[in-house]
Amino acid sequence: MRGNTLGNAPATLQYLATRRIHREGVFAIPHMLGSEKILDCGCGPGSITSGLAKLANQFCVGIDNDPISIRFARETSLLARRHPLFIISDMHSLPFPSDAFTSVFCHTTLMQSHDPRIVLREILRVLEVGGIFAAREPIISKNYYDPNLRLPAAFFHCFGSACRLNGGDPDLGARLDELARNVGFEVISYQYVHQDILHPNNTEENRLFFCMAGNSEFLSSRAKFSDKAHDIRIAASRSGNRLGLATHAYAELIACKER
Ligand SMILES: C[S@@+](CC[C@H](N)C(=O)[O-])C[C@H]1O[C@@H](n2cnc3c(N)ncnc32)[C@H](O)[C@@H]1O
Image (cartoon, rainbow, N blue to C red):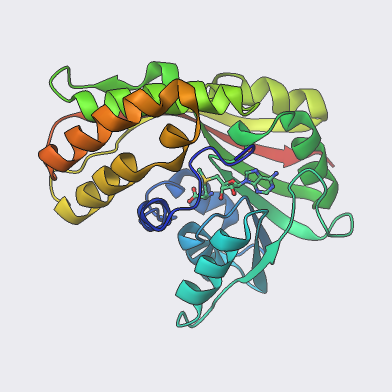
């Protein structure tokens, strides 16, 4: 489980696959549109990668070290007219020559690393001079939950603790700009945003969230969380797609490999 706290159960992959470049990655579009070669680092089930492929002039590659996520990404992107290439690989040691990409994207992936500086150095290496790095990472301690909505709050509290136990940092967004500067990136922009994770007009997406929360592997995989897992499963089965306000805090970074 180390390095992939959410796991790769079907319910989790289906929920992650609701992510889109025009929502989770909209801040990056103006900087990546027309890039020759794009890399999506820690692509998971690949729905954002498929959006990135439409922005690329030549090609787009997604890498992830989880074979089940990569298989899901390959199968679900096959029908797209411009589908990305998906490769199983560790982001701490990217299997590409230096200067291979015009831009690199990362979404909720650096937070999983035991040492994100190693990953950032790798990203800097594979970027061309002048290339763009766009990243979005959570600041989970700044999330907001409707006090009546116990399930998402309990779920993300457990997720944050499990992520730390796995060597990651669920608040990584709060130091993303500093980390990028320290490895040699020029920071172009850095901002905090909030995004609703439950959607008043999208009951199907809410249903997928509740399925993921109720089925999460990490909750039952450690003794510390197994009692919570039981409560969360019961709450999930009762709440269906009940609506309420739950917003997540993220930091969005645009940086450049200096000339
Ligand atoms: C929360 S998911 C995000 C997936 C995708 N970026 C998205 O937003 O839909 C984090 C992903 O990082 C991947 N990951 C974790 N550690 C990794 C590593 N060392 N190398 C490559 N991928 C890794 C996990 O397998 C998982 O698919």
